[in-house]
Amino acid sequence: MIGKANGAISITGIGAYAPEHVITNDELSQMMDTSDEWIVERTGIRERRVAADDQALSDLALPAARDALEQAGLDAGTVDLVIVATVTPDMAFPSAGAIIADELGAPDAAAYDLSAGCTGFMYAVAQGYGMVAAGLSRHALVVGGDVLSRILDWSDRGTAVLFGDGAGAVVLERVSEGGFLGFELGADGSGGPQLYLPAGGSRTPASAESVAERKHYVQMNGREVFKFATRVLVTSAEKVLAECGKSIDDVDVYIPHQANVRIIDHAAEKLGIPKEKIVVNVERYGNTSSGSIPLALADAQVEGRLQEGSLVLMTGMGAGLTWGSGLIEWTTNGRK
Image 1 (tube, one colour):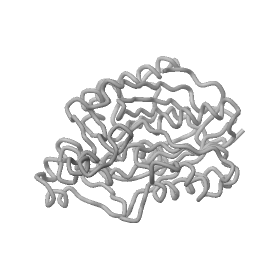
Image 2: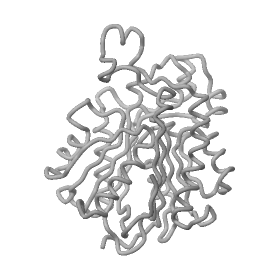
Image 3: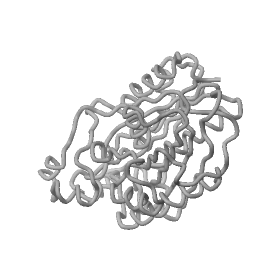
């Protein structure tokens, strides 16, 4: 699915939150057969954040959401749509979106969760954009975040070294000029078994057997996911740029999903984008799934990289297998 944007709708507020607890590679080496050198060489990750025992997804999302609303200059009561991209909600239902809307003080907002793995934030932003463009929402809050530490086998170095916890949020609304130029989204369900959580759903409900067989932990075919990621990170970006009549040379800031430095480096080389234009923070957070791109977006803002008129390209890929890109002309001119 690909298309140009219709109407000036942009991000007017950004927020991010990562748990305080840091686990370094050296600490992981005490838990499994790995080392700091092994992890850094293969992934670029040096540490990751892990939620406290009493922190669920909504506890990570709320500080990020509040910061995004404050930056946008909005009271939570004006929010009429909350979309939460996550694969680790507080519980199966009610949705994290409903919980977050209630905690924020947005009692009349439509609120729901969206599951698209690490691509979730891009899917959610595209949906939020569509709702605002259609006139169904005026102030949309989009949250991306995950608490992946809850579904990791901490004895499996093939997955445990890769992931971390974190959340980010953005406010979407109409602006006077600039904003999103287009989106490209897709999914290949045939690749689903390459990255999945086998049990806990209606096909394989939780049971003593499923727990004993460790089916409630992330399962990943690392080699196949790497091949998929290096391909779609490039093709999705190329498609959305072509659709919007832009080239890679026009891009000022590139924010790829923070899964693995080798994947990012491969995409940069294939796209022909210089490293100084790329936002990379995977060394500090690991792969935070739906939290990845908004956390990197927040870092880009803090670093002063999101200037008026900057062309920002965001691309994610993940479980599904899914992918998605968004192209935005950054604006600081405020709402329309």
